[in-house]
Length: 224
Image 1: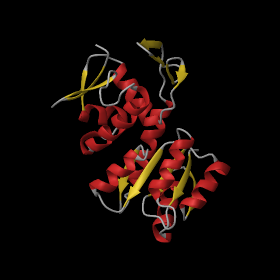
Image 2: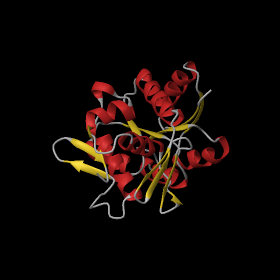
Image 3: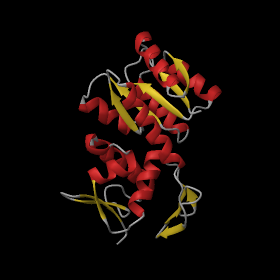
Image 4: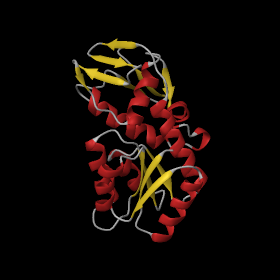
């Protein structure tokens, strides 16, 4: 039974999401603040965090950054608006995906299932690309022999791009294969994740070697 930590300050929204996810077979721990969420994180060891951005006290952006700094736990953020500033800031803080309020339970459930599938997907082979080594079986990435800590979506994006070096992937193709969003995906998810991934695997993220931009088309994995 997947364990979900829900951090949402609105009682009505919190109860509705908790009920819907429980009915879909999730074990849900719901809390009303970022501070309580971080406390429960250590005690409950959830599989995924559903995080509201607009929280009293410590806001969702700070909570997201703290969770991401501590490990690779998947984070789906809830935003009251499809506001570009909020969405981009949340993605840059380390969120893997987002859902706009009012939340449609079936949409949130689909996003949770998708991120959990991405984590559990089977891989094979050990690959070396210059200073970067990718262990697809163990889901481990190292650079210069040192482990690189990647969030689940960052890892999935790297695995997808590196599966065919030199191939150009459009943002829509990456949304479908990495986020499993299909037609209604948002390309900002891809761009923000690429930015975070480059910061971790590139020597110089402004002159990327591994995750290269093909202007007007999308991204490809190098060196080629």
